[in-house]
Length: 517
Image 1 (tube, rainbow, N blue to C red):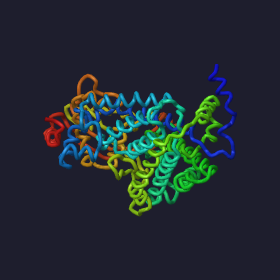
Image 2 (cartoon, rainbow, N blue to C red):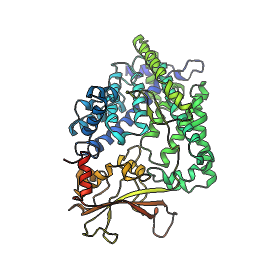
Image 3 (cartoon, rainbow, N blue to C red):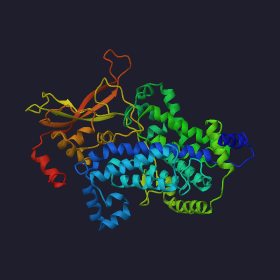
């Protein structure tokens, strides 16, 4: 009763006073809840996929990778300094799962509303540990974007106080650093498009993107079939969000709010039109720093707003917290020089880290857009003669299209890491993705981990006699067709020849790279 009376005694609308300086109590609350949810999804992906991908019997075993790194750099200590990770100390399958589960549990604590600097530091280091040994499975820009965002979030909170609204306000320097992150993510993505594919510059990129993107979603065909005029307007909205809006995240209050709304709406549009992992949700996180408590007070539940107002009315100043925030700001400023120069350079590179802790990185996405969708489909047969007349059964991906009558699924913010790598592989050769031979070998042995990366096993009782990979061209079928198809496809060429478990070419190669004894 006393608590309720105290809540009600706070002057109504304290966060909405026009002349009051902006505060960020509710901003911190929303940022940390969303970040916790993203961490939870990321660690859930690790729980389900780390062992078959980089475990002791995985497609790219982490033990071999760490040996290669330490050999190249001269020692394990040098390896740790270049790629800090807890897995230098312990990298068994149990270690992989322990880190993933611990991260998931701690993420759920943050989602529930409880966070402090220590907890967020542990989450940051655990996820960075995974990224640094994840090899090409964790080579995406949003992995280092999550580590950078997670690092900044550490300093939004007191060291020990876990309460949703502790007694210390979020330090303003960290709010500004979040805006700086949003600026670099958005502008970097825009500039890589301007400098990249001609179809971005002539506003026709979306004629192709929704069909050829990595993993289309349930609404991707609808977007793809929109009138070309609307798709051109979509590109113009892209320029508004990625080239113009970023410059206003540092502006006056109204300009910041408008820029934040544009960026968030742009990310939500991408979310509903495809499956880009947790990238777009993660990009929303620093954009939320454009909004102050006056903004949130108008849209969040009033009971939550009043709790934040109570905390603000009792706020104390923590000199150690502010000093730390300014020290972090100085470090980030120094580390930002090279990424900022890269962003304005004609030779701009994207999704690259310039320091071992991934504190300040470069970002960008879809600098080029393919005009055709290629898919590699693994197929197996139990027949003795592996010619084209054999009964070839496909291994169905969980996300990538294989079956022509299957509607694209909603996967994001979850990520199917095999599917993503096979999307890239379809635009390259097996020589550039040698681990696909290890995958073929495991399918020939019905390896449970490898098979778990697919939607189902077409050979549940006995392994196939042969496995091959075939390259197909896919394109959306028109809605309302008599067969109820979502896709059309045509054969392009064999991608990997039919291989058996004892094929000397396969066995010799796997042995040469250490994937089999």
